[in-house]
Amino acid sequence: MNSSISFSQFDNTSKIRVKKVEAFLNSVELELSPDIEVFVSAKEKSKMIACGGLSGNVLKCIAVSPEKRGEGFVLSVMTELLNAANDRGRKELFIYSTPKNIAFFEECGFQLIEECDSKIILMENSKNLKKYKNNLSRLKKDGNVIGSIVMNANPFTLGHRYLVEEAAKKSDHLHIFVVREDASDFSFKDRINLIQKGLADIENITIHEGSDYIISKATFPTYFIKDKCSINELHAKLDLSIFRNQIAPSLNITHRFVGTEPYCTVTNNYNQNMKKVLGESNPKSNNIEVIEIERKEYKDKAISASSVRALLKDKKYDELSNIVPPTTFDFLVKRI
Amino acid sequence: MNILKKSAYAGTLESSDAYIHVSPIQENEIKLILESSVEEIYGEAIEELVVQTLKEMKINNILVKVQDKGALDFVIKARLQAAILRACESNEPVWEELS
Image (tube, rainbow over all chains, first blue to last red; front, side, top):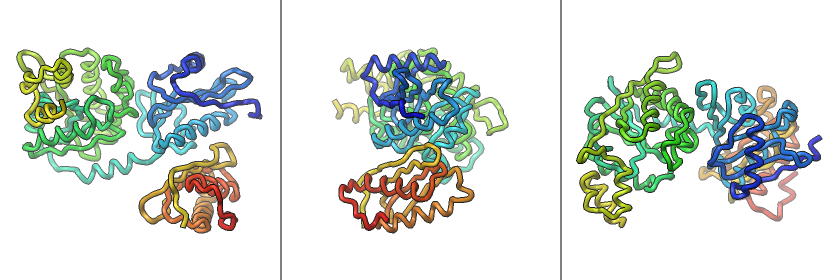
């Protein structure tokens, strides 16, 4: 039955083929995700009938044309996609899709992580979330106010330090998660190292390595697109829902602290979404109070990691020491 | 003892087949993750089959993931053997081990 169907694999440099995939996706009311590296497509009599994409360790944009549905053909597509991922040594995979496909992907060995707004789902095939939650719950601390901060700290500034100081004052214990994805100017190792050094004197905090479940390319792909102001609202909500329903309960987190965002309206929207997704009560999990802390300023301008990177770029090294702690300054100077 | 050098896979997700992924692990043990559409009835039988096949091939440290779609015994065994041979990068299989 499938004898005249041919599969092919190509990467995102084949512009013409990518265009064809995009047209096909649009014809089934899906959009092409810009971060896909590897595509798989199936053709019958030179007409595209199915496709799928791989971005890092995330499978997405999986589609089958309507006339080919209901005969198990999508299983062949999934086989090809899994092969493409396995050939690249990517074993622990995620899938982005819509809720109606949950049962199908479960048959392919994936488990649901989170569903958001009845629009998108994230699934994984590694069962790592459970392990991760178990590991976290061993680090649980008692208290009425258990705070949390998620930071990228690219690199760690006096602004981050201020946010942590204020949050730690308001909390019995404060959990800090460091975004683990190596998609920033400074590597994860350097970023977490500077955070640890810069906060060594604060007692009631735990610094956690991030994971695939906190602001990662899986949970929040658009976060890492350079122009931050293209954050996809649905992605943001998905990431926040995972935080609320999966991560926070393992540590009994009651509060999340975030710096105010005076510059970028989209990041500011993200903070507003945070209040909504974490703060509103719903039966699934306890709500988390979001507290915005006014950003620390230097010379009437909010301190930000991006201004540090700008100063580095312009080689204005002497100005750096005003907005980063000595530990970060030493590191930056050595790096020049 | 045969040593896995890398991860490898064999099979498909289609009905009556199985998709099997194997990878080397540090610990000296056999880890099996089995998901099957017929798990309730044949789950234990499949586990036994996997363990037996690994024993025959003298494999002691391995993570095996089986996504079974109701494959018959010999299909599962053949897929597992194929995945392991690929993972061992063995060009000259020991045929006696592949009964």
